[in-house]
Image 1 (cartoon, rainbow, N blue to C red):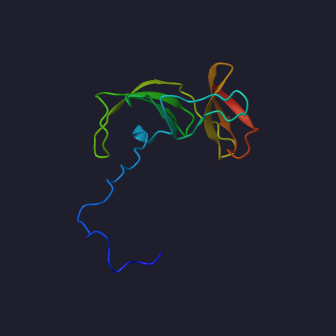
Image 2: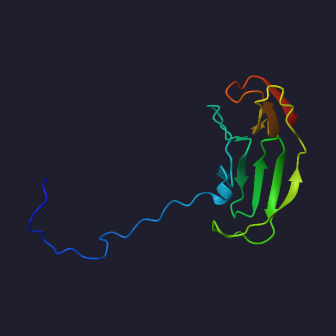
Image 3: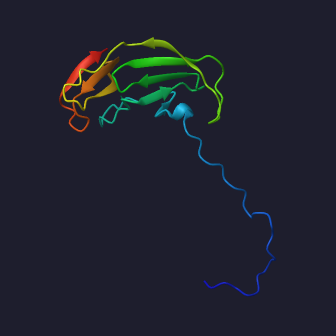
Length: 137
């Protein structure tokens, strides 16, 4: 359609529709919040690769799969503050003390579930997930 030279209503300064809020990222920029799912059929389980995290529903706790192979649980000293400028101070509560052997020099850790257990494995190459070393379960 072409623009009209005689609009039916005069223009207003206020927007005609209220703006929509921008999407809120998961707290602490974690990959998952509150839950990770295990697939029953299609092998599409939720996993954490190195440098990815799972945060609690209230954002007070965060489980991080570090790039070096250490799985660690952190907790906030004070209530979570939802602001990029806020100071959220974490304390380490628990860790596996695992580390990569890194024989390929490109190894990456992966946290996944199998047979009801949490497992941390080292993958020599992320793209080729056949060569692994179990680090912790």
